[in-house]
Image (cartoon, rainbow, N blue to C red):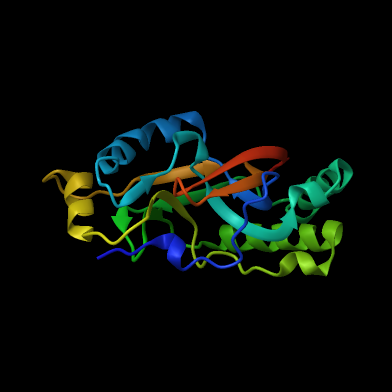
Length: 205
């Protein structure tokens, strides 16, 4: 069974400016490959499928509303991340098959050394540019792409059946990310989605 993801969230926000996050954003070809599994899930009434343009890997969340930050602070954050990530290069993550968790449907990747270095670089950059309070939130335990959140209780067997339609589950495969996106993220509880706008970027490598 899956249960409502939003019943257990903490530090919710509804400010239209959005909250600052560091994301890895897949390119268009990867997003195109994710269309089929998201369409398969759309028929299940207890799931909120995430919009194609909102799919991402969360690196870190920060305790700052975007309206509390100046453009120069965000620019310095992006520049500081460039310095702290120098020499790391693009990040390759190998994602498993889409599967149900307790409250969502996602693709998980192993937290390889490059992931840990990237998280550390983003955290160091935020501390340098925005102060030590930027490190309030821990990173996700592993990188993942969330396809849908549960908005009510539901049968995870229905999710697996919708995803595979009798076929054998298979890994999604490798994805390369070549930049950190610094984003204004919106939590849309009524719709069951998270959406974002990229406000600055840090190239990797």
